[in-house]
Amino acid sequence: MSASTEEVDTESTPTRRRLRPSQLVIGVGIAIGLVTVLSGLAGLVFPHEFDENLVTREVFGGIPAPLKVAFYVVVPLVLVYGSVLFSQRVRNWERGRPDNRSTNASNVKRRARDFRAGVYMKTLLRDPAAGIMHSLIYFSFLILLAVTTILEINHQLPDGLKFLEGGVYQGYSFVADIAGVALIVGCVWALVRRYVQRPYRIRIKTKPEHLAGIVVLLALGVTGFFAEAFRIADTGMPEFERWSVVGYPLAMLFENNASAATWQQVWWVIHVAAFVAFLAILPITMLRHMFTSPLNMWLRDRERPKGAMKPMPNLMETELESFGASTIEDFTWKQLLDLDACTMCGRCTSVCPAHATGKPLDPREIVLKSGEVMAATGDPKVSPPLSIDGDITISANSLFERISTEEVWACTTCKACDEICPVNIEIMDKILDMRRYLSLMESDFPTELGNAYRAMENQGNPWAKEGDEMEPEENRPRI
Image 1 (cartoon, rainbow, N blue to C red):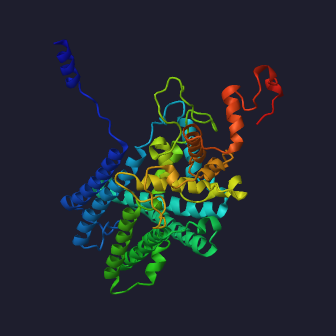
Image 2 (tube, rainbow, N blue to C red):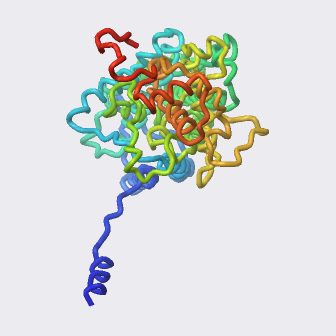
């Protein structure tokens, strides 16, 4: 009787199910999509009469109703589609072991400092050309995203609360045009750097998806200016639009053009198509690092001191049957996030002493190859961090399908790769975890380590000295 009662109580006890990160990503995508749809519906249900005497612009001015409806249908659908694709990547991170990276009062300042250093591209700017080029693209894109959001918010406000008028609108137009110029300059610079100058560490990893990402961003900037120019020309070249420091001079080329209204619609459609293309390729190309890299920067802070290995459990008490990392699931979720945060810049490889002396280690390859295994063995499978040769196959969920033991043991554990990484990827941890597996589970280690391991097992130190033979700690060499 008591047993059955306990069974009933257990079954009746409600269990709280926490929302998984992958589900949260889909939820955010749906929420943004719904807000976009509601914004479109609000414009239809509560139309605003545009006052041509105001110093401002008419949102969707000159754009036919069918095109506006298409915009508010297609963009939300692509947003939801993109969130589903991105959630599949997040599901891969969920395969990892727990890792306490929670934000609390004791670490929030350090995290904010690390995040600022990363987002302000402190590490990237050690190479001024790459740092400035990337800054032009990144910050101008954020500004243009904010500009578009502000325009839509102002569009939906009641007439008495609208703020994009007069001097505010003129300042808004000036900032938007300057950001557009910065985006175009950054994209052209990126194309020249990748396909004309072709630094070695970039050239060897350049793939078609890099060109696609840069071209889509460049198209956003160029088509935005032409749509703006034809809009200004079609509305009669109002004097206050001179604050559009690029759009207005460009519009002067098309002044009195009878087809200005048609061309405005054409360029607007191309501009929206470029934006839709950007949303579509965002989760499946390297462009995803716009989200994953800042997240990785924020989560850099951890409980372990810098350079310390993850602690081992008590081997006499633990129920673990394997130690170290040999499969994707042996990494923590943060280590798996690292794999999708990588920008493939190759800075880690450029400072690696093992790589510089001709040893088989390439830190960037450790990250990319681990990402390939993660992508190929996920459920569902996702695109690898960087497109790979079609002849490369991954038949099992083993890191050593793509990473050789020679690569792992070539590392000097100097941590230079971690220190130079602009997005705070923890490469050395991955190498040490794989070494731990090879040593403890496979007894696969260089012969030079055999004596040291035996001495550590028998005497508790790698020098095979008894306790009374050890020099006083203050006389020992500092490593």
